[in-house]
Every structure is written in structure tokens, then in C-alpha cells.
Amino acid sequence: METILKLATTTIGLVEQLSEEERALLDERLKEHIRLCRKNGAPIESLDRFIIEGIEVMRLEQRFPIPADAEYEEPHYSYPQYVSPKGDS
Image 1 (cartoon, rainbow, N blue to C red):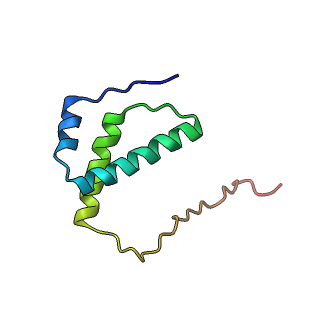
Image 2: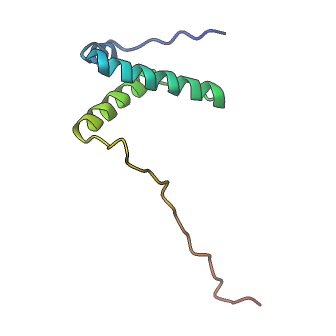
């Protein structure tokens, strides 16, 4: 079943203001997002929101670039075990 998604005119206007390089980056992200949604069986809800957020992230990355050789580690969270005030009895 094919789904037709419509975009708001304001979202279209934002995309039209992007350079060709920025549009290519956004296109890659959009395709990856859709691929992962389909792979996980998640509905594609709001492309407008995704596009706007994608543009914002792109602009942040342009202002504060991440070096290509930067290593990323997942944050590690540790939660202390709950200890009963009654002890181990």
C-alpha cells in the first residue's frame, strides 16, 4: 500500500532556501529515517517535523563541526542497587 505524504508550504519554503549541498545532506537523512521506520515497522508520522529538525541539526553542525576523527562513545549510566532498610533477612 503506497502512502502519499503532504508537506506544509512553510516546510517546502525552508527546503527551497537550502543550498544544493544542504539538500543532498537532508535527502540522505530523510532516506535513512524512512528506511529505519520501515525496517522497524514504525509509522512515518510527521515528515514536516523531521525535515525542520533535520535543517536545524544541519545548521548546528555547520556552526559547530564535529571533527571526522572524533570518537563517539555511548554514555554509560550506572544506577546503584536499591538496598532495603531491613537488610538481607
